[in-house]
Amino acid sequence: MQQDKNKLFVNNLSYDIDDEALEKIFSEVEGVKVVEAKVIVDRYNEGRSKGFGFVTLENEQMAEACIAELNGKETAGRQIFVNVAKPQEKRDNNRSGGFGGGNTRSYR
Image 1 (cartoon, one colour):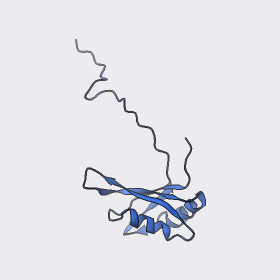
Image 2 (tube, rainbow, N blue to C red):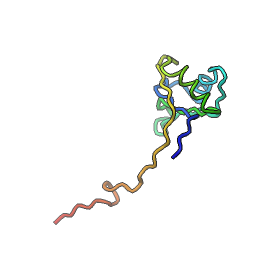
Image 3 (cartoon, rainbow, N blue to C red):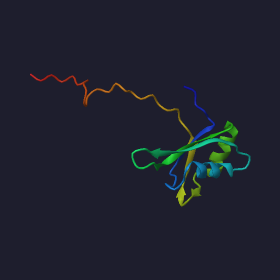
Image 4 (cartoon, helix red, strand yellow):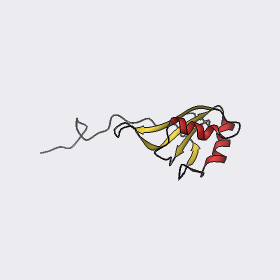
């Protein structure tokens, strides 16, 4: 699977940062155009931020500039970490065990 080198993973975000604030942080890097900024939220906890997100930039050079300038920088009271996002791994939905089968134990 090919890796998009213009998509960044941003970790250790303040829980107060939303999509707009994340986009603003990256847009302030000179010469950078943000395509999309998305803070990941916990749908089971009233939409509270999980403290990380993804930013897609126009090209790989812009991503490299953002990593160089923002990785390790303090933002909203927290030191953020910025890296190229890894492709999402396919999840195995056929797990054995638990409710609904797959358990191969024999009871005699």
